[in-house]
Amino acid sequence: MRLGGSVMKPYNSPKEWLAHVKELGYSAVIFPVDSSAPKQVWRDYAQCCRDNDLLIGEVGAWRNVMARDPAEREKNIEYNIRQLELAEEVGANCCVNISGSAGELWDGYHPSLDSREVYEAVITTTRRIIDAVQPAKSCYSLEPMPWMCPESPEQYLTLMQDMERSAFRVHLDYCNMINSLDRYRHASDFIRHCFDLLGPHIVSIHAKDVLLRDGFLPICIGEVPPGDGSIDLMQVMKLAHALRDDMPVFVEHLPDHEAYVKAVAVMRAAAEKAGVPVK
Image 1 (cartoon, rainbow, N blue to C red):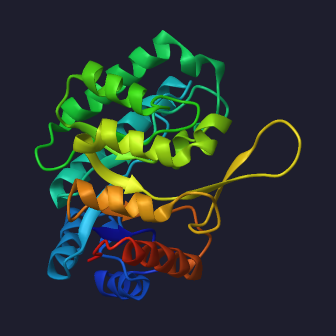
Image 2: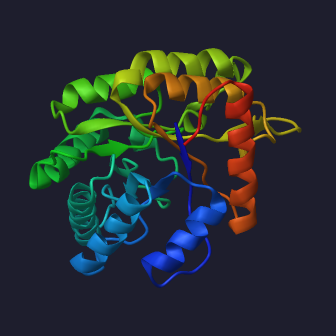
């Protein structure tokens, strides 16, 4: 199994970036430049990864392909296509986005997100992105979110079936789907269910932690650094390793370099306690 995350310190070359990666102890990485960089820069960073046994787990494509403004939506779809081209070029496990929203916040709740119209738009848009590239080495994935498709492992599996594209695979973020008190109470069972149902299709994992905030209604389940919440991280590491030896597991949403160092150390310690080897 491999651990990775973001690089928060600035860098201007593969050598500088690699120094940060080594300090963080990563063996899996998020590709450090986007498709706007010259292709030779793509190749230089990809070669750096190969030379140092770094698995490129994902290329991010974080743009709203469901934006209400047609021009913005088209621009964002084209960006996702270019990012998938980048992922294919460098051999990343996946290019990942979220399905998006027509609301004020591109990653926020909107009533339309539960409609058949939006579901069909997700399929149409995702097919367009995949068909424009037709990746053979990489794939396109949608990270689950608490209030947008896919918001459950069952919906993710249905989405895969309806997508009818072999290049559409699973980027698992179990914490993003812990969106109810029942899932929070029974998080270990829910996480195991995610792996059981989606396991053969998972190409990358975000490993996070959550905590139920004190106070009155409404219920607030917040994301916290690994080890500060209620998730059984040893279980996560066991389940990830059981999928395959080089499964990339990423920590994310941390404020600075030091926080990433600590989070990776927590995940590595959980793996050691679980008897899971980490590259």
